[in-house]
Structures are given as C-alpha cells and as structure tokens.
Image (cartoon, rainbow, N blue to C red; front, side):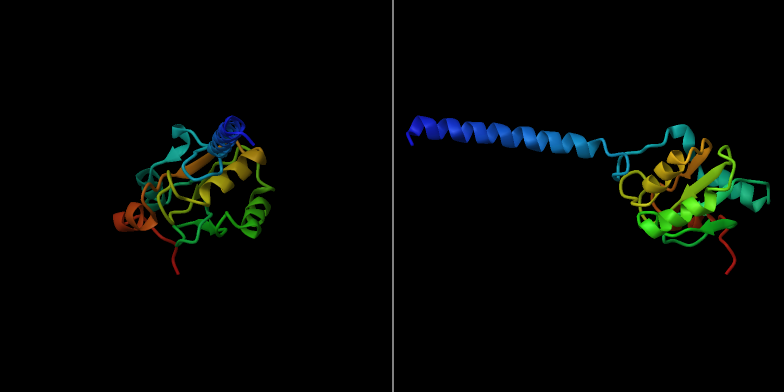
Length: 158
C-alpha cells in the first residue's frame, strides 16, 4: 500500500470515528431518562416549603410517592427505587386505578435532583406514559436530608 493510500485510509477512518462519536453523543443527550435531562417543566417542580407546610397543617394534598431509597415523608407511599423494573412495575400497579388527573407528587432525595437522580426521571416518564396529567416533582436540589429533614418538614412516623 502506498503512503498516499494509507494516508487516505487513515483520514477516512478518523472522519468515520468522529461522525460515530458525535452521533452517539447526540442520541444519549436526547435520552430524557438520563440524569441531567429533565422531562418535567419548571412549573411541575414543587418547593419543599409548599408541601411541608401543607403536611404540617394537615391540609388535603396529592398522592405522594417515594420512588427512591430514602425515608418516607409524611403520608408518602413507599414504592422504592424506580430505576429498578420491579419498583417501576409497583408504581404502575399503585397508580393504575386512579383518575388520570389525580395530583401525584414524586420524590427521591438520594442525590441532587437535577444532575444525578436515577429514580425520578423513569418514574416521571412512566406516569406520563400512563396518561397522568398532574404530576409534580418535589424539588430536592441537594438531597432529602438537606432539603427536607434539616428544615423540620414532617416525616412518616415509624
């Protein structure tokens, strides 16, 4: 093989590698269940203070679903880590009989919501897939300890 042919082959291989890498990065960046990609809007985020005050006052509120491995807040139904199929199935079974406009509040709190949480996105997407229209995400930007427990908001009684 001549040097010119070898050079062309190396250039072609480099170009193909660059296209393949770019395409793979674009596909993964569009995956809404990937951490850091939020399928919810800002309006669907619920401030801990808002829910905390509702629970302290025993005001009627939505169905609260713990879809993580953290402690249950007051009145929360414990589902478990929604990144595991059996827990996502448990979530589906729990909400299936409900009217699709039921207000649902989901939370995890294992880690920073916006960048790392492996549980909220799959749960949110599953609820949307099931046709629920009133889904809220408890905004725990750091974790449950920092954004809920340390603020004195109510936990489930043990």
